[in-house]
Image 1 (cartoon, rainbow over the protein chains, first blue to last red):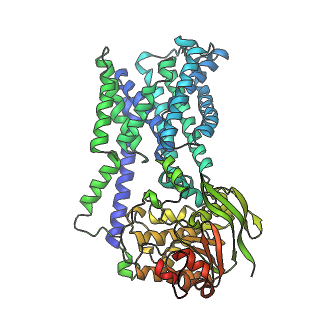
Image 2 (image 1 turned 90 degrees about the vertical axis):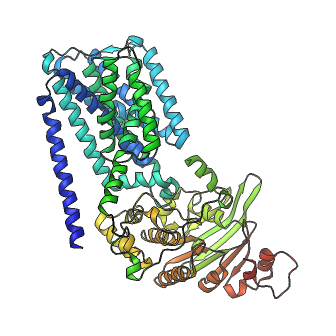
Length: 368
Length: 246
């Protein structure tokens, strides 16, 4: 028991040490690598780390795979652009519009969620894609969005050499914030209910979980953070167009980042973003006329599906556990066998559809 | 005794199949009631209608005299009806303890204490940190029973608690039900294991083709001609035993 406690303390200590080193490295990054080309990679990686983590708070925890996050990302960007233009806001004051971007994301998520969250799995994915295209079309066709030429952001009269640094720290704060929120949610009853919904939504409802309320809250929170980071992205790029603000590749990228790092984990989406986004950006900058970034995305997607379907964090954790528990019993230390409890019985029989109650079958079909 | 749970003239059909037809059942407070019948007689459908998983086409469901017909499953649970499923439905990616905490609404420390007590009660406390998906079928049955009980519902609906588990576990489940019943908990049990039902239940209701064909104490029900007909078909001898058919 003492060795178990010592081991747990050792693991916790190692985790905290790694976190402190990681935080210090993140804070010092633009000071050590002051070249704007390098800090540009950092800004984009953190923007996508925030977006992927925000997506994970809803989709990773609940199992509802949304391919409509670009709706909130683009809407956040457009909200800042439209407000800055119509209210004549310029200079650093435009950063004060970022909460508005979050608010717009959340405001769109409520009616969107009330409709989309009534269906599950594939149907839900299709609905999110449909809503995404509606928003892209609106951005193209409404006059207040600037039509196909989009909107410019107010010019920031900052020095070119350090222009990226404030954006880097804002994006870093957003990433740290969403990671902290993800951690808190995972530990809270709210997170437990989301994960119960992912496993068996109908069962969770039968145990008192207000599934719609829980899902909508997570969806709205995820949308608010995505809208916020969309606003940061707009101010950094100083331009938003319908095809860049509402970009289908954005959705694919953040989903892939979360899958690569580990769906439903805290660090997974951040890790995935830190791997994929700089690689994609490098290929785009290096080979301007090609589609190497998209090819990289496709290749990573195949590799993840084939070799690491659970993602880096869960698979890596499993390897470490296997290494550290080699030669030891996998059963809990206080297993009931030793305590005179229940012996392990037969494995669960398969759930043949023929045995299912007639009204259970459609619900499970929808879940699939 | 007062009626804790009552269904009145419940109808439910799926397409052209009449699953429940004028189904009226009453469960008294503090009893262990059995609901039996041949396959397809509507037992699980009645459970689904009571717990909000299926909507009744007609008829009413009352809990302690309060109408709860067609309420959503989460609301039915909050009102005091907990249930298990014929084929266990746990949350496999969560730990055993996390499964236990899903229905809890109190403070985390108090909930954990109560959850651990329930796990000890059903005999799987040692697995509290294990992933629920790694449990055997029998252990899953016990976990499902434990997490329904942790919320302390007024009545527990058990759908085939003895199905697919070994004899020692069947006896253990029966013992736990008896203990809880002694403490005042009401149960409604769907089960094909006649020995289990007849040995445990105070009242037994028999369904056939969605209709109640008999209701009463086990000794009366087991000799009822309509029950024998339902299980074994018509024109059978008087000495037939329903256990042979199940």
